[in-house]
Amino acid sequence: MSTTTTVPTHADGGDLDEAELRAWRGLLRVHASLSKALDAQLDREHGLPLTSYEVLVYLADAEGEKMRMCDLASSVLLSRSGLTRLVDRLERDGLLVRESCASDARGAFAKLTPAGHAKLAAARATHLAGVRTLFLSHLGAEELEVLGSVWDRVLPGAACAAPDACDC
Figure (tube, rainbow, N blue to C red):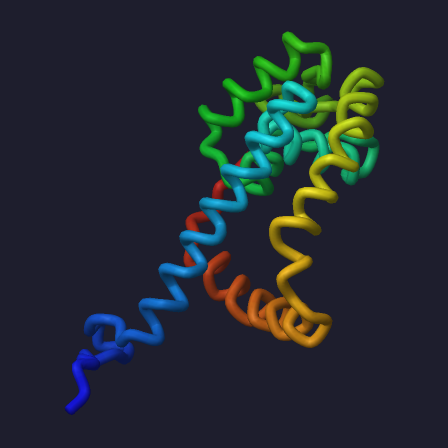
């Protein structure tokens, strides 16, 4: 006699079955644990929290090393007010500057500074080593391919369901 209980699942809004619940909770737990560990490592070794590191990475990768604030908020998954506070701190630390938008007086850009480049360069090796040690080292090449394919399938639906954060 099995003690496993399966509850209805489907688009009808029923509860998740055990496999679905394990997959969903696993994703949440792993993401939270990895984020916490990587954040602590970056903060300890470079005085740079993970969200600040992410902002610097997005700016470094952007054309002209600058992004509109609303695009940056969408990229790093922060509210506009959360991003504003973070950008204020990064600007005080000299890691980025704000620039006004010539085509839209209401718009503003965040632009990476030379000090931001230096901080990012120092933190990047630490972050990538952490990602490899804490996450990638536990997976084989085939599993990485499968996970990449899964995220490619899931993200578009999730992104489309989210409200458009950038209306500037």
